[in-house]
Length: 87
Image 1 (cartoon, rainbow, N blue to C red):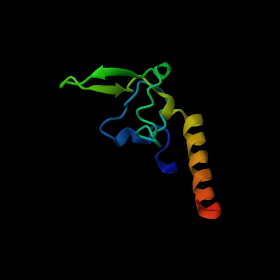
Image 2: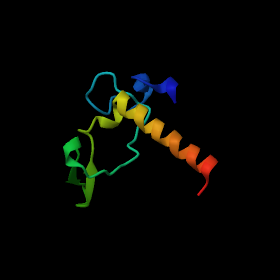
Image 3: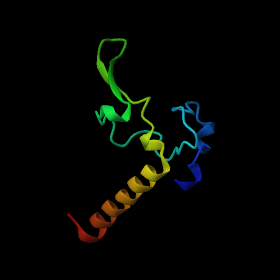
Image 4: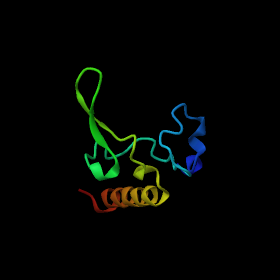
């Protein structure tokens, strides 16, 4: 994962997916989508068929280095617990 950090996503046809400097592309998707937390900048919109979908294009939280590092720490902790502690 580390080799794709901080703007390495420039090769991605969707880059930049957010208007921000030093975008961390470790998570090119949000692992908690849809969070439904409007304070992030996300909002419910209608798609072309009239279905409600969560639009997170104004949310930048998942691309902040401090958030990416914390999520990775949490994932490692979960893996450790599952591997060594069990169910």
